[in-house]
Image (cartoon, rainbow, N blue to C red; front, side):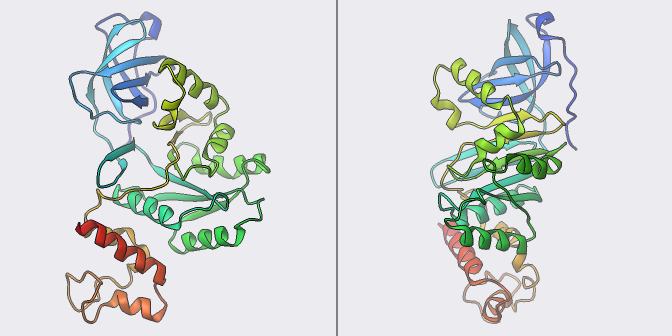
Length: 312
């Protein structure tokens, strides 16, 4: 059940030490957080004790500790949590997300496996609504490859859009707004794909808010390593994540992998063996699908690579 966007709390100016507040976590850096209350008041907060269980998008209860300061006492149950993980580190991206928006472009060259891993991470997190946005359609370099990537995602059942955030800004906003309105959307993508440009189109004061956040933390580098929650004027919100080159899936169990392959669905369950891993087992329906052309060989190689990683 989704937490309501409206919360009840005293205005920031009237709050006293010891008062309680229910608010959304809109940014996180280390153990320092920014909270936003119903009236739009912003609070700098720390988590009580040594717990590291607070994520951008969380609803929390906090105790006022002074002007603009608070201590987070508890975190409400989440309806979703999306994160990525490699062999060394797990990184929470955001909580209480309804939708993933994957941004890619023909320049710089995108990684197709990044797109597929983001889809799989969303599926495992229980987030079924995904939009793939191909940005920079005005650039001729790599256009054919980018279009092929968009078509492959459409085959996987993903809604797709082709836009140019810089050259056709009005059209980009007109296409995106109806799909983001009244939803909580997480923007992900490799560095340089144009996420920040899109964010500034959708939330005009995002750049100002980011600058304010950076100055409060005494530096500009922190904003490249943390997610930020931005309310949309028409309702809903977008969460901007830092650009990164790899979407690690070390947190995904081998038994959960197959759920993230909708193109395998028609074949899974008809193998000779119920516990078939679709590698070298006889009479494997998935491998038969690859041989017949029903499953793209690139997708099968992707599955095999993930299965090897999960077995380590």
